[in-house]
Every structure is written in C-alpha cells, then in structure tokens.
Length: 285
Image 1 (spheres, rainbow, N blue to C red):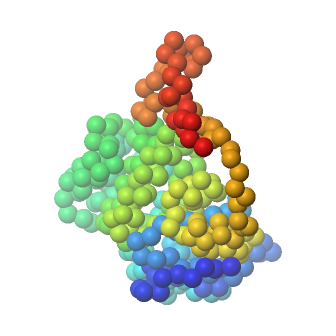
Image 2: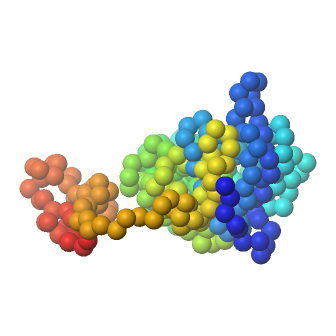
Image 3: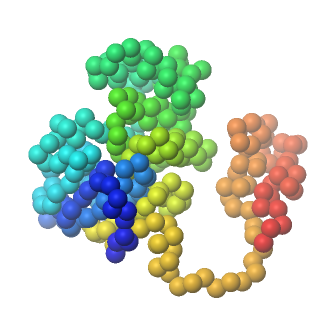
C-alpha cells in the first residue's frame, strides 16, 4: 500500500519492481518506492527483510535481477559511474581508519576525491560535527557516537546530493543515537536526500518524512507517519496519567552531557535528582 507523493519535481531516488534472489532465496520480490529530493526516507524492516540488499543495488554494489532504479536521475544499471559520483554510502559499521586521527581520515578521503585544499575541508567538517577538539586524536580513541559522526562527515566530502545510511545507529548507546539523529536531520535541512534503513521503530518515527515497511521482500506500506497511523482504527480517548519513559529517566539521571551520576548509581551517588528532574513529564495528563 503506497500513499500519494508530491509529483511536483523529479524524485531523487526511483525504484520500480526491483527483484533480487540468491539462488533459491528470493530477497526482493518487486520493490517500488520513490524518495523526494531533500527528504529523509526510512526503509523499515526486521533483520533479513532485504534492506541492505536494496541499498547495495541503489549504490551499484549489486545488480538487480529485474526492475529498474535511478538515483539523482541516473540509471543504476547503465549509468553506474554517474550514480557513484552522486552518492555516498555509510554502512552498518563505521569505516574509519583507527590508526589515523579524525582530521587525517577526512583529509585522506578529500585527497581520494581529488579535491583542492583537503585540510580546510577537514577542518570545516570537524567544526560542523563538533569534533574540532578531537580532530588531532586517533580515531581508535573515539566513542561510538564520535566515530559514527566522523563516518558521516567523511560521507559528506564532495557534497553528494544523495546519502545512504544503512542502519547508522546499530550498537550505539542512547546518547550517541541522539547525536547521530541530530546530524541526519541537519543533512536534510541542508538539502541532502537521505535514504535510511533501520530496524528501530523510534528511529524511523523521529527522522523520516516518509516511511516504507519492507517485509518478506515486498513494500507492504509506504507513507508519512500520520498516514501510517491513520491505517489503524481511531484511538479510544481515556484519561491516563502520563508516566516518564525510560528515555526520560536515563537522561534525567545522566544529564544531557553525561555529567551527572558519575560518582555512583542513582541510589548511592548522594546527588539524586529531584522529583521534578526525574519526572520530566511532570503532572501533565
């Protein structure tokens, strides 16, 4: 089921009846979707649903068995070189060189892309992703969130109009996930088209302009969050006292910058949060 899309301009990504099999395993069974320019599109599905296979086809790493796809106006099968010039791919695991510093990683990619003034490009990206202070440290010393932000920064070198993020927050802690979410939102605000694969429902809900659910090799629904919610029966209105979520509790205890609670756990630190802090929801219903 596909909800109507804005036909005012050519989509940045168009996928039509894509099929892919590995011997007797049919991974994609006729997948169709479009991604508007400058939007965030989430391809949501469980492990093995075919999300990574779809990304590999769109990034020219795999050939589809049937169907057509275009990225930035270029056919992925017949204009692969043009597609690769238009995209950047960030895989499930950060592809940084841990022996190099953060700045050296960025300079290396800029040189590989034959760009002028790679040092300035690196410094600008370090500043953009709040990594300037860590730029001179080896990437091996970075936290998971910092490493992923560096990975995304490396993807932006050359200003590709389309970026593929394949499960970008897998294995990250809650604070690191929020950091990555913020950077992804900024990409779209700057006009970059983002195709995001994820198995996390909250990630798709937080980030995506449109969400497609891939299940057993097929897109079973595609629309905005509001359109998807409208597929369910109207909610029954009841008075329910709102309780803090686990996320509220986590950030109330550790603080936004992870500074609180370092001297012990919440019960023994001697610096327990007040009722107001530990219950951000307050008494709102």
